[in-house]
Image (cartoon, rainbow, N blue to C red; front, side, top):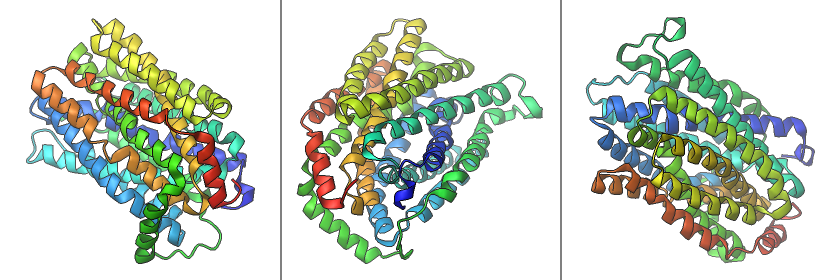
Length: 431
């Protein structure tokens, strides 16, 4: 992308709108509707549903960890970032729509639903790799934190409005427009809502997001692998980025687990019905959006590292409160507090990576960013599923999240943000 795209309001708005578009998938499919529907209606029972869903999330994480750095290197080498973003988005949309037609009780419905979900989730996360790599191109260093915050904030707002639509139109005793409730089709049909939402609102950036000038548009797999190997050999030049990615390798496991199992925990431990969980999700998205937006300015003032540390410390305390919440009212309070700090932890992580990435390795290194978020991301859901199964209690499973926040936070304290920025500028030109 050219210099004219930096801090361009039109480009930033379209980039942020993609966050608005894709957040419907994580909000409705991964966290608040389909995951719960799967555990209640498709899986044999809620405990086995939690375990099976955890394994699907884990399988997705492993696939993304393997594919993201490779795809990032290929995209950088051939200037294929936009093409890969379009392809990943299209696959996620198609697979999400397909989930609507997997009926409970049909032959192999459990394995079919899980396979389709894994395809959709992997495509979604791969799209995020290419999307995130645009951040250093569209935002100047003094504004990168707030621009990342704009995207996360707008994303939570998009997820919020999509949840409202799902609640008003689909998830009710008498759905609007004559939508059938037979075999829970009205709930499964929310996947069609997500697919349409994602398709519609992703269009502006899929059109405006351009590849770097001089891109060949050719897939050079051999050269990309060679460059990837060289990056691994030279990674010591980016010591602070490596320290950050290792820390994120751990604390992001806690975030992934909260997203994947928050709704399941609310339903199984506190007896929330789906409509109440949707309203709960709506309120969490409100607090998360506000947190991401407001902490974007904190990020630009204090730096990404300090913003993430503040968020992780708060999430550790709040997660402990969620484990011991005695009743639904306390869980509501805890959930709203989690929302405030979840957004900043993600947004500031992305902006910190944007500051550490040398320009010539943007997509490739954001592939490493995805790798750090997914390589061990199967551990969080795996630990949660194992603890839930061992103690036959969801509280025991949620308690495992604390370990990831604490260890990740300690490792993040060793990162020198200023040194990491100097290394990126020295190898990639002025940012």
